Image (cartoon, rainbow, N blue to C red; front, side, top):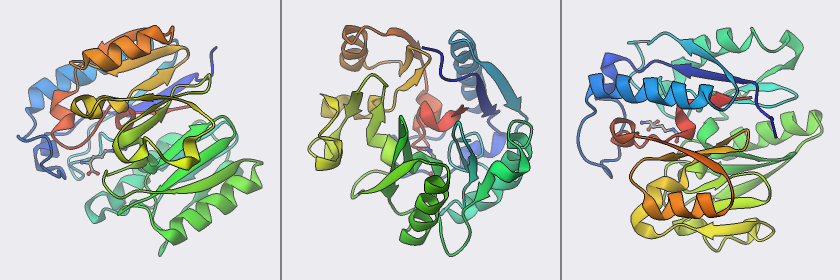
Length: 258
Ligand code: CIR
């Protein structure tokens, strides 16, 4: 199934070495290696039949290669978010400029203060969206987001997070009712209706795989998850994300798919 036609990514900047990190995956990113990994990521996306818009690096914002957070792009509308991390809040301006090439003015919506929301907390499952209430996405941001989506005929419900950075750090929908779940999301009643594949704790990072038009991109180095995804019947491509992982970033964070 071809669901996505476009992808937006942004080149990592040198300042990424100063990006936000929880320290869960120790070390500072190697910028040159990150560029090589980003090239491979773009190549993998191209193999999934999408056109890829590559935005230039922005040295002002160390975490700006994680384009998933400043916007949520759907079939019916675009939502420019209001990132909860202060150092990332200004990332929305250049993303909005890029998004304007794909959406008419009257379909571009905004989350505004005091509401905060980051796209990593949003998981699209058909016409239903789950939104994580996290340290980056607050109650008011969720209220605004639900109101926007309902205007376009979508539904949306909240999921509380206790342990991970973003909702999609720990749970990802691979279409066809298939869901990868890890840690705190394993037994959440919210996901009962889905066919859940529980990720072993030592491969928790790889819960963040992305489905792109029936191919699933899996981070390199997680054999159990790779085997699970292959057994579901998907074509798979692996991409090494070691340098982005040091900043708590995964495969989904690095692109907007729509
Ligand atoms: C941050 O803490 O905001 C970045 N270092 C990582 C963002 C990862 N994005 C995502 O999970 N959607």
